[in-house]
Image 1 (cartoon, rainbow, N blue to C red):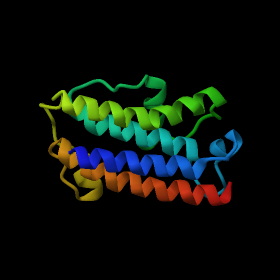
Image 2 (tube, rainbow, N blue to C red):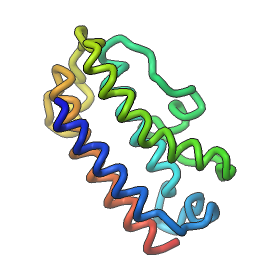
Image 3 (tube, rainbow, N blue to C red):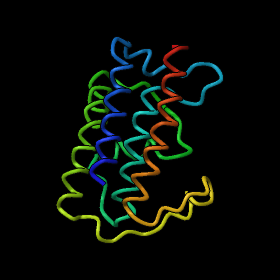
Length: 154
């Protein structure tokens, strides 16, 4: 599992490097024909990781609700995030992966319930934390593609 967590962190660091130099307005912009923005995608990846790793293990998210609920599937950005909020989102983007590594090492994920939703949507069985981490690598890659597409049009 450590290798998967390291890959998640590497992908997230890569994605943050791609966003260097973008203004807050660019991170918040929802271009025509898109449903969300770069900031929402970062929050969504945090939310997905929290839901699949912590939620399915019966544990509360390690982020405040303001960085969780607005980024659930089927949500859309409702407002522009301020500079401090964007900074926090970027910090959480990495710190949540570091916290996950710490919590895995501490053995916090003994209880885990399957995700029928993922099986219905993607045809993927997620029965344990190892499955969740494998799915998250796919999910992070998918949204990295969205973010890079958004970057080109903002």
